[in-house]
Image (tube, rainbow, N blue to C red):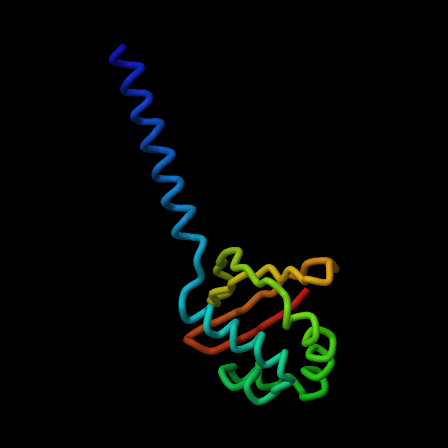
Length: 127
């Protein structure tokens, strides 16, 4: 009986630890949430200067024409989209956050990735 009780306590503690780890991983860092919100808003408003403002030198290499085509494709649909943080990766020194974009028009979802190093945006892609 004692072994059964001990195994139950261990199981419950394991579930608690896993639940705590999952719940803490479910939120983006404030900096990343703010940067992604700013980038999505810039796309919606077709505001190139705001889009590249927090970028590193390479990110500033994005041309207005390139940005314009992305903005034209996504701006109307982003206004009513639901954006959800999915998780975080570490790649080549960048902190990469993943964002699910669920469009209200019923079209396929998209995946956005935000790459940040030293507080500067190194990349932002929507696939």
